[in-house]
Amino acid sequence: MKIAICDDDQEQLRALEESFSQYRWERGCEMELCRYGSSAQLLGEIQGGARYDLYLLDVLMPEVDGIRLGEEIRRTDWEAALVYLTSSRDFALEAYGVSAFQYLLKPVERQTLFSLLDALRTWRQTGSAPQFAFKSKAGLTAVYQSEILYVEYRNHILYFHLENGETLPSLHIRVPFEQAVAVLLENEDFLHPHKSYVVNMSWVRQLTSNAFVMGDGSLIPIPRKNFSSVKSSYIRFLAQKSRRRGPFVFAGPAGEATV
Image 1: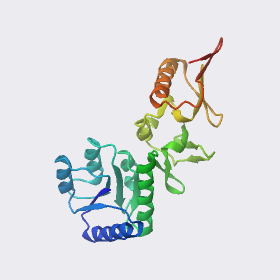
Image 2: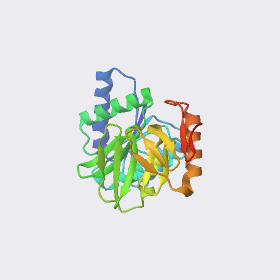
Image 3: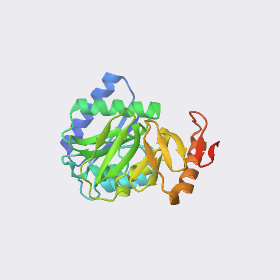
């Protein structure tokens, strides 16, 4: 695994390097670690063709801040994991705007870093979906995208309905629904069939004439004006994924037809 750490705090760089060395020794895994004390230096390397599996980026850096650096990385690389390091939670939603894998507060404890690296290795080995983070009463909450059945938007609050039956509410959001869930909509598994819902099509049980029936039995309404495009998107999704759980059934006014 190739890892790049970028932080203008030399003490933080040394601490992270020591933690990575300890992890490599304890887990017996191969890692190539590159340190950058300047975001401009790392940006130049990236523009010159350098690629890493994992980037740990400080958010607040002179010349090029971590968020902008992440945006530059995403111009050419959507496979790498981005992890942001900062002493403030204020940039969390911006960090997840570039599909960050995680957001860690400084100082990063060694066990926290170890858990992150374990999760990243599992993700790369199994192909599990990345995480999505949002602000809740409990703090910054992260859930795996693959575990989200659908997201409901009510009274400026996001409700994340998960496959384990939990429903996790966000704090009051101050941006439009589409903007708040933009990262999810970049994932081909997710669809925005209704102004107040985003659906993970992997958990759709059935498409009726006016709704998605989800795996937990919930009905996600589909406005008549959206139905044709929603149906086309869902059929295309099934064809692309080739992972049907059974026959796809469209239940129309005149009865049922198998597609």
